[in-house]
Length: 488
Image (cartoon, helix red, strand yellow):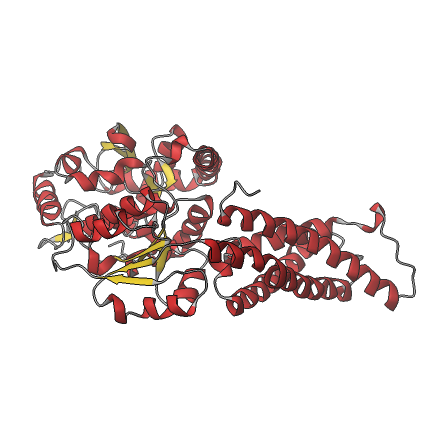
């Protein structure tokens, strides 16, 4: 147990405690039920029903959803208790809904039993977590040395520093700010790197204000801090959607993302291999199901494309995937056959070269809200094609790419070969993961952004990729696609 990190220990103990407390609460609820129905309570195997299993699954899912298995849940005790209450209410509603849908026996089919079980669970769980397990957190953080480094313009007067001083588990605050006002595309200043690499003892945490530090500099600082074993957090609006539980937003009162891992090392770790296997399994099941369910829609779209303009139904193109490997990218054709791509290539290369600015005439977002450098009012697009693009229907054949393993359900959009040739070295970091059909840009701004901002979001996704993150992005993708936001 001691070999685990504090984050791992509290996560494991939290899951075990929640399950045991749920079982104890069930026993309490049966006692309440028997007292009201003048029957003798007997805790036997016959006393358990499917409602209990549903409740256990609902509790674990709700605690995951609200972030109660994150280390940051232990930083503020009042927030911890409120989050437990929120998760308990979510689990209660989910249990009642699922039990009704599947007609599962629900704690001897008594509403009184259900409510008393969850009431007992909240009281016991809050007492165990905040009263008992919290001692492990307090003891561990009191034994750790090192400062908490905050880097950004006006760091000493920032909201983040004020919050860190109010929370538990953070050391003495060392606020640093860049001297160079140039940001995106420039590396981290040596003085900032030196403050991290030479500090003794090593820093506990590093907080980076992304907008003021810049994209490439942020990656340099992340690498330096991770090499010293520090927890790293990035603040900035571009990363708002990566805080899937919204726990960090409530804790720090601003959009903050924790850097979970180094994507280049993840495949070599056990946790990375498990997550990779889960992601691939999810991709296979989801893409196969999508191809079967959407088969009628494929047939209708194919007919509309053939009637709208002469040419093939599908558009095939070579794209660059993970590690720079190329594959055949598939989508429904939305343009006339034999069009000239020279103008598109010209503005795309200019857009990449500028990095932090837009190019006249270039639409910066694709059907998923991420840049594919689409020309505004492109005359090559057919009438049917405009509708397909607006609702991202032209991207549906890419589920075949997912099934083949060329793409994933969630990930950065695959680039063209000439785009990759124009990348700066740090831009190539976005090639470290499998490209996706949907992703962070699908659910974030879906507005005009710079190329460097697009790369920054893609790379930060690779740092924070997890099954929960992917599921959250998929769930938020659906309304964005149905409403056609930013797709034109």
